[in-house]
Amino acid sequence: MTFSVTILPAGRQFEVARDEPILAAAIRQGIGLPYGCRDGACGSCKSRLLEGRVLHGAHQAKALSHAEEEAGMVLTCCGTPQSDCVIEARSVPGAGEFPILKMPSRILAIERKAPDVAVLKVQLPANQNFQYHAGQYVEFILRDGSRRSYSMANAPSQLGNPPAIELHLRHMPGGKFTDHVFTAMKERDILRMEGPFGSFFLREESTKPIVLLASGTGFAPIKAIIERLIEIGSTRPAVLYWGCRQRGDLYLHDWAEQATQALPSLRYVPVLSEARPEDGWGGRAGFVHEAVMHDLPDLAEHQVYACGAPVMVESAQRDFVARCRLPAEEFYADAFTSEADKHGPTA
Image (cartoon, rainbow, N blue to C red; front, side):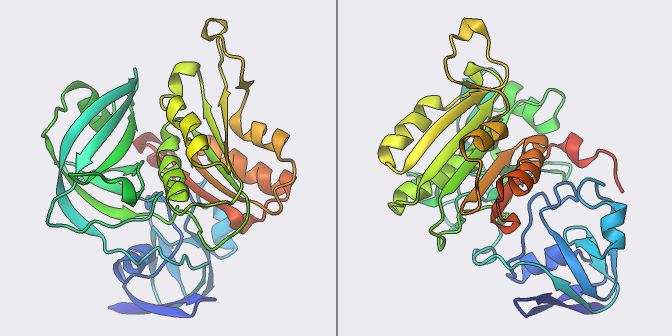
């Protein structure tokens, strides 16, 4: 049995099987909806149900509270239709334009940029034309069928020869995949992956000034977006705020500084939350999103692209909208939800 789902105000209509998540059907049919984790943990796909009935699978209360569900909000990533539905959701031009491919990939290089950060170069198969927007992510499919998501850290124009994507991984002790990366993975290993996924990428049609906000390895998709800005010769004012705990965690600090030379409209502001005297740090300290608010108390005419720890992304979204006049629809986010995050308390 299938049901018809209509997306307003775009007026797009597509078919969804009774036991199929609405988002999965949209992705399969090239319908551009907003989303991030696809696991009911981040809330990026939250939309309003105008007509019909949707049944939710397991999800986190922070992504969709009981009160929000009672008020008619749905998570398209884990909501399955039980009737024909009409849903109000902003469309994302370009989100569904590239085919999602499942393919083998080969580890070309593993480089430790910090004690707990590895940069992987992952070769793409020569017979696949893998296309993506800077900011999107891929999923590695592990042997037991579980998946791990990582954002491309290089723009599509920077794949190199042989073509390879760059990924930034932080070691999560006890993590099934990152333990393997940091202890056993070697060059030439073969991994299976699928992508591209996600609606986190630069809205190039806008002329608004840009705030690029990253914490930790959330810098990866931000780096890809900066490379895209350089590629298109953007003159939009842009500022990169990269928050880490200590100086050594700014694992591509030199790259970020050099990017400001390649893109004159870009400024770079590193921020440390736990600066130590022995680091000799003379730069900004504190929480990275608060540094943004200090420097830019009025974000009414800006776009923000935020990626990193969920607590940072949530705080930035809340405070920028409530205290800095940022239009809610101009906050674009990709929260790095770990497996522990995804399997926390559910609603």
